[in-house]
Length: 340
Image (tube, rainbow, N blue to C red; front, side):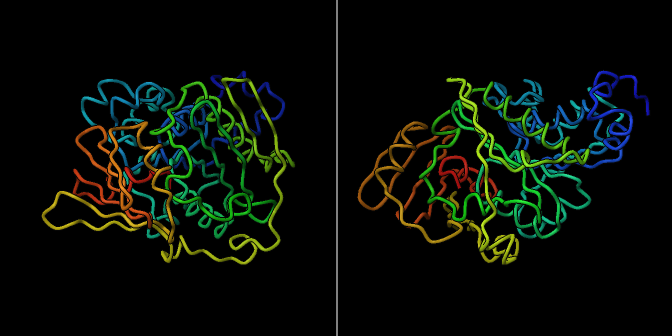
C-alpha cells in the first residue's frame, strides 16, 4: 500500500506509520448515507480505512444535493441507490480502499449481518428506531459505534463503547412519541451543521480504530453552528439500563419496531409505531405544516407532501402513507416526517 498520500496524516503523532497500517487493516460500517453518512464515508476513505461498508435503503433525489456531498445531478437523474453512487464516487477518491455498497433497509433480520466484522459502526441514519436497533446489535456484539444527529443548525454526537461507558439507551431510555421531535423535513437543516457533525463522527471513528480512547469518547458533543455554541456534556452509564446492563434487545429480536402493511387496492401503506403512543394532534399538525399542506380534525391529521404523497396520522401513532405500495418507502416517509 503506498503511504505517501497519507504523509501529513502520519505526521500527526497519534497516527504515525503504525497507526496508518492499522487503519489499512480496519473495517468501518457507515449506516445511512445522507448528509452525515456521506461526510463520514468521504473522510474515512480519504484517511485510508481499508474497508468501508456503505449501507443505505434510499436513492439519490434532487433535495439531497444541497448537503449530501458524494452525489451529483447525474446520480439524481439516474435515481441511483445512494450506496451505489457513494461507492462509485469514493473509488475515484481513493481506489486503495475496498468499498462494499449494501442497498438494504436495516432491520431486525439483517442488523447483525450489516455490522459483521466491523471495527466501528458510524451512524448516518435519520430515525431513532434504527439507532436503538444499532445500539442493541453493537452492544450485543461488543462493537463500538458512533451516534450522530443533526437538525436545523444543531448537531450532536457521542461514542458507545460496549462494556465501557453508557450506551444509547442510557442516554435516551425511551423514544419520544412520533411527531414530538423536529426532523430535517419539518425543521430543515443547514449543510455546515451536518458537515461539522460528520467531521466529529469521523474523528471519533478514527480514534476507535486506532485504539486511542479516553473519557472524552463517551461525552455528548453538542454544536450549534448558527450561534457558535459548543458543549461537551458528560454522560453516565445507567446502572439499570435495559440494554447494556440487563441485556434486553427487543428491537434486535423483532419484538419492538414499526410495521408496515400494504392496503389492498388503495395505493397506500399503513405504518404502525414501534411502541404504543398517544399523540397530540395539534402538535403533529403544526410540525407537518412546515413540510406541506395540512388539514386536521379531532380524529386525524392529513398532510399533502411533495411527490403526490399524503400522510394521514392518527392519535395512536398509526399512519397511512398514500401514494406508495412499498412498505420500505412508507416506513422511510414515516421516519422522515414523524421522527421515529
